[in-house]
Length: 82
Image: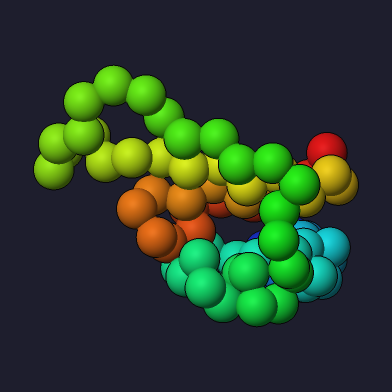
């Protein structure tokens, strides 16, 4: 029984530090306009090539130097810290 309490405390600590490490970066679900308002203009912008279909939406990547933001249509999918 003690091991399960220790394990649950460890999981809470990991979740806390993971969230605090990415607190200064865009999070999933943000819109392009809110990212631009909060972080300014990106240094570079890349868009996926090829046909755009409902099943294959356009992916856009904004590079800010220390991190990149991946969008599906106009919504943040991932933020990658370099």
